[in-house]
Image (cartoon, rainbow, N blue to C red; front, side, top):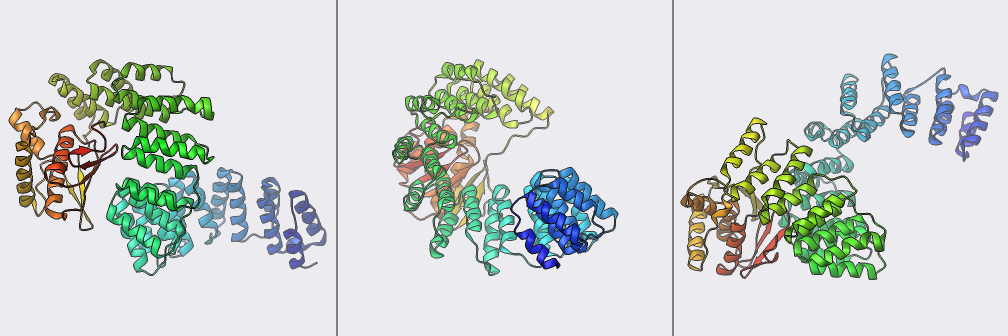
Amino acid sequence: MGPDSCISLLLRCKNVFQVRQVHAHLIANGTLRHLLVANKLLYHYVQHKAIDYAHYLFDRMTMRDPTTWSVMIGGFAKVGDYASCYATFREILRRGVTPDNYTLPCLVRICRDRKDLRMGRVIHCVVLKDGLHLDHFVCASLVDMYTKCVVVDDARWLFDRMLSKDLVTWTVMIAAYADSNAYESLVLFDQMREEGLVPDKVAMVTVVNACAKLGAMHRAKFVNEYILRNSFSLDVVLGTAMIDMFAKCGSVESAREVFDRMKERNVMTWSAMIAAYGYHGRGNEAVDLFHMMLSCGMLPNRVTFVSLLYACSHAGLIEEGLRFFDSMWEEHAIRPDVKHYTCMVDLLGRAGRLDEAVKLIEAMNVEKDERLWSALLGACRIHKNMELAEKAADSLLELHPQNPGHYVLLSNIYAKAGKWEKVARFRDMMTHRNLKKVPGWTWIEVDNKTYRFSVGDRSHPQAEAIYKMLMNVIKKLEMAGYVPDTDFVLQDVDEEVKQEMLYTHSEKLAIAFGLISIPDGDPIRISKNLRVCGDCHTFSKMVSAIMRRSIVVRDANRFHHFREGSCSCGDYW
């Protein structure tokens, strides 16, 4: 019997028992001496996860080629025996065998899945030593490994030096930046198209996620038009990603249009749309959509209830939120986890029901985390409960003593209460522990470009015109009754100095720039990395009325839509 007939026999094997029968037959007729046949037999053992039989065969093979080693390494990986994978790789090197462009990507994938950067770098050194750094498959696998290990700079260095890049490699690199640098992710997408590659649905989902992260509406509109123009089918994955994108770029109406266009929706689609209403303070619509979801026979999951409870919290729907929380276990057999408890602490805390929030925390049977205590501390700041704030802060600092945000928040609570000695003590603690406050930034879109402002910023080329517009607006607002709320200046300085500091908050500068740069009738869209302060919230409401402009603000927690002197949050944020 020839090698081809033996391989044909192996292909018909349905289980390990049949593979072993063929193995015995190959030994009997002497065909196992052919390396091609032995490799195929080894491969079939590995495919059936019969790693002991595979290893037995491997150890008795008198000849081996790179394919033999690769199959054995892949077999160990298949059953999760990574130590043997690495031991086999070391044996390859010890014997002087040069790994090929199948063996190395296989090993790199193991490092990627295990996030084993140290071994990944060892393999990269072998690649360079053996001259395989120009091989497309090897380089592509290394780029993928570095991105999954969150070493994006190393991935980009390799990516830029690849002689050829396929769609998968571009998509991997775009996805890596989607989390760490969404702007660069979209730049890469443009470069990919300029090089003539046509993105597939996976690439488009990656780009949509980058747009959501960036929150830039002009890019979201471009991506949406590209998807429509190229007739991508709006399946569950792409459609759900687009709902999230439009919601995070400030247009819940566009998110709903996508939702309504989708022919098929799963639980994540419904949850994303409920979350979209929550981001924008439209809690009643989130609740209505949840009831519609149930009436369609779609069962909610944990994510659905996080979205729903968040929506109730940010819309002040206290009783509804309590009912939904109770219904999780009673009606849907879903045990609340720490995310659901955090939403409830936030909901009760915002409403001033701090005692109930504390009782809920004490009754929890799940592990408490940073977000839970942060929600309670934030509620203490709103309602100026110093004693409870200190308890929440103690728990936070015990969990994460190196997070500067916790020190800043408690320091701000003390500052509002005029306890400057304690403010100084906490700021000294930050200095001693080498912790720095996260600076406040505000971004604004103008003519498809994004500009960034900080407090008192004069770096913009149009700074003079921006400050002139700002002063003119403030005068108009003061004539209409605007009085700067200096309680939001958390420094021990004179009232006059506090007013000057308030006047140049980054969001006010961004809005002033929008007023001189964005045509009447178009909304002014700005984003903040921190929570909007109360004075800037009042300022934005009055600007929307006096200047007759629509303003959309995305802060660290939610969206605010300012129109005709009112905000979509109903002053509840």
